[in-house]
Image 1 (cartoon, one colour):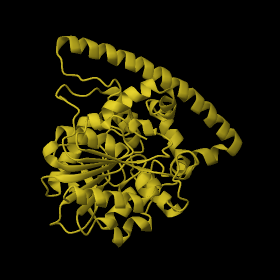
Image 2 (spheres, rainbow, N blue to C red; image 1 turned 45 degrees about the vertical axis):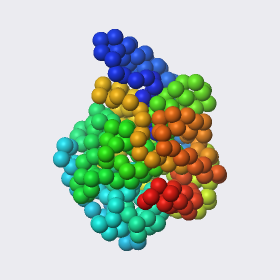
Image 3 (cartoon, helix red, strand yellow; image 1 turned 135 degrees about the vertical axis):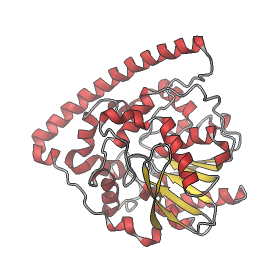
Image 4 (cartoon, rainbow, N blue to C red; image 1 turned 135 degrees about the horizontal axis):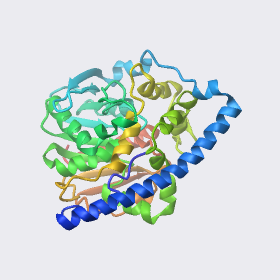
Length: 376
């Protein structure tokens, strides 16, 4: 559930010749993307038509707006809700924080289709040693989404916007650096943020999200991963992904967390109330349902900036990987040490893509041991 980001896997550091190659690469990427997207869009459209016929249009298009936060989102044991307004965008960011303000910052970035609540186990576990802050990312949950809503808003979700959000969020919280913890799309943002802002990241913990230089090359050389990434291409189409996500009252979210292929392997990892918390992210009043999908659209439509000079992460980095991930193959972890000199990889056997929710005790134990060994 993340994006290829730098799908070509090339370093863009040249000038004139590079501009030409980038333009050509962009044309080729656009043609391939739209061809594959149209193919999957056709398949999904046919499937949706049969679903409407079989279960009826009322069931297919029926979804309810969640007026009130599920009670689990207001559990005081998880921390307190707070808001900050960022300088560049003017967006108001929502977060939940646990732990005293004088403790070092642990900033946790969630993925798709999630919200701050995916870090509930870590908020409770690390509050004694850190100020743990789990925000709703741009456009998610109670964090504001830039205008315009819908498909046309994808330029507001480019990587430069997302990494600026993280930088200004650290500052707004009153810190000069953090231990950055990220999963899925949070990891897609955390990798370039740590590379471009080494002074702001003391330690980096990534969960089930490959280094950006690895993902594109791996997907293009492993057809099995290409097939697993079908939804990334589908999400490039306008409107259809939103209809799919919303269908049968956000059944896709339930399938993501509890389905046979993608769902958590531990039976009680995600409760019905937990599902309601994640559905609330997309179904609360005034929610921009396209926001999470626009992350994928922007990633395919924008290339990395020229100022991006390398792919090395200089801070100590821990990668935690659930080996039963239905979206990302274990092979994506190979070669990460070439880009991260101080690198530790820890597999979690039997855990799904949602590793920190599927096996929270195991993940928390790995984090604690590694942080202790790194002097935290």
